[in-house]
Length: 100
Image (tube, rainbow, N blue to C red; front, side, top):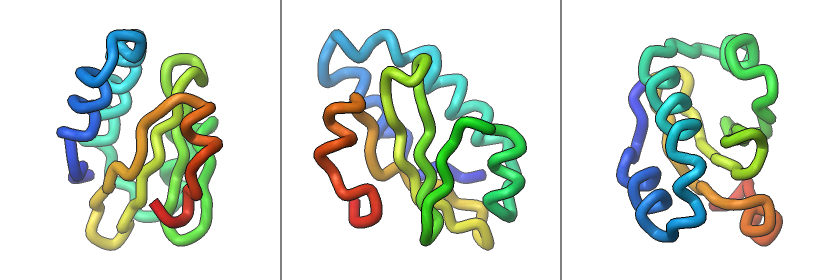
């Protein structure tokens, strides 16, 4: 899969020191996703059982033992993953996951 944009992860990790505990988990997600070849949400779910597949290609991943949320939009036909949001549960609760 191609991931757009790695810079979102870097910005999140560099924005505040309390988020540094997510670095290993985000890096593991990134490396795994780069090697993936998902053509359907079911293929994604077979590898990330705790991911929440939403409508219109949105997926929510739990990061660092469910301490953080990563929201992506996936274009399965083109094998592209767009990072839309990374944050804490509290920050996640304040967004509309379908419109970010």
